[in-house]
Image (cartoon, rainbow over all chains, first blue to last red; front, side, top):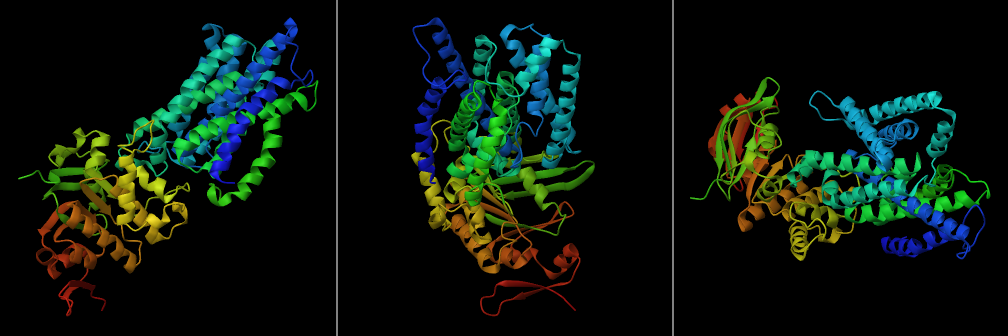
Amino acid sequence: MKAKTFWVILFILTPLVPLLGLLAGSSGFGLPDWHAASGRALLVLRMERVWSGLIVGAALASSGVVLQALLRNPLAEPYVLGVSGGSALGAAAAILFGSALGVWTVPLAAFAAGAATLALVVRLAQDDQGTPSIYGLLLSGVIVSSVCSGLLMFLLSIAPAEGVHNVLWWMLGNLQMPSRPLLAACSALALAGLAGTAALAPELNALTLGGETAHHLGVRTKLAVAAGLLLATIVTASAVATAGLIGFVGLVVPHVVRSLVGPDHRRLIPAAALGGGLFLAACDILARTVLAPREVPVGVITALVGGPFFLWILRQRRKMGWVG
Amino acid sequence: MSEPAVSVVDVTAGYGARPVLNGVRFDLPEGGMAALLGPNGAGKSTLFRVITGLMPHRAGSVKLFGRPVESLRAGERARLVGVVPQEVEVPMPFSVESFVLMGRTARISRWAGPSRQDRAAAERAMALTDVTELRDRPVTELSGGERQRAVVAMVLAQEPRLILLDEATSHLDINHRLDIMRIVERLNREEGVTILLTSHDLNLAASFCPHILLLDKGRLEAAGSPEAVLTEERLQKVYHCPIRVRRDPDDGAMAFFPVLR
């Protein structure tokens, strides 16, 4: 498959997937009755759901792209570095106990905790000269992540019963938002982060050649790395606050898209964001219909369906990708 | 008189308590071509790091074309000085063309992408280094010599007035070393680009560079023409082994041999 073919497929899927998303539901296939109030409500519900799939998928994929470039490591992604885990802990605490900042409580708590986690991970990975080593980052990321998930379990164990249900359902990865203002707040945060990420493309390209070469090319490396980490944290936090923990998208979508359009971030970032969004929205359609009327958590679908599919593509495109 | 391309005055720099450079002072005029020689640990890399603003100096002053290096903004600095390192590790399969275009990072428009000028500079750089034919190949698949030519092309696309080559040919075979040196010499002669290179290859440095800077233990031991600087006594003192200096009977080029027995 050539890069052009891939773009054509993306442009065909861009209207197609959302349309299918409006038609498909756990209550049956077809457009809901527009003349009935319940039909209209259902349609709006499905729209929101398609939208949150697109935005969360785009956010996770672009965050993976940024982290892989900054750390120059194919394993980097928001989960491995603890950003997702930290954001989840912050969001869960906000869902259970907080409401101080209105609709912004959950996304801001997710962002603050995600940023704090990343700062801790980077601090732990620094050597005596202050530069974080890549292996140090991955190792401390995994460790801090598991501490976060331990704390999350602890929160659940002391939380009131109905709160536990909310958090559990959210944690499994769920694109059905409890409220429209919350979806709007998270989307605004994610879109701002995506725009910033796209703007950082030239620096990300240079930084894949290493900090020193990027410096020689005229990049203010410290500033660019800090901006990249901040943007990755913003988009990850908004994705986690929206939909909980959805694995796989942040790691694999960047690899697959890179193997198809190449590693130039000016093309890679929009392609990965669009691809990630469409992928997650499509998975969500399956999640709602495959065992209808029962819903499967979308994170289960991303892993079960996405896994083999992406492995197949990666095997086909190994040479152009970044694995072996 | 125009300002020198590099002006280093009494520079001291180092890591932790140990000074690696100790009162180094030299000028490299614009349009010059010089080799910075010296044994491992003499401070060559540190001096390059100071000149490119990667590392702050503790005392003295470092100027590029008359401007203190610490006062330059990153983008301005990239227009003045480009660096060809020993090896650029490229983890992702960038095409040669997009790799060379990265030389334009400091000039490229953030949203509009490469302009006609950016593309023209990249084309010219690829032509000069003979990598135009490789433009669609992933950098990760190139041979060592091709890859280093692509790195030189990237630095040329940057259009700096001074190019530093840090052991840029040391992992290449003799033929590919000459390739790189000829490209560099041509740039110096035809475009007036100032060149400063480090090398462990005395033969190559003496035959291509009219000016030699010999660094030892963080001090500048000698500076001048190859004949004046690279004498048997001085080389013995700096490299701690006897070295014979001879002339090629055919063209008179200087040749250096370690005395093996």
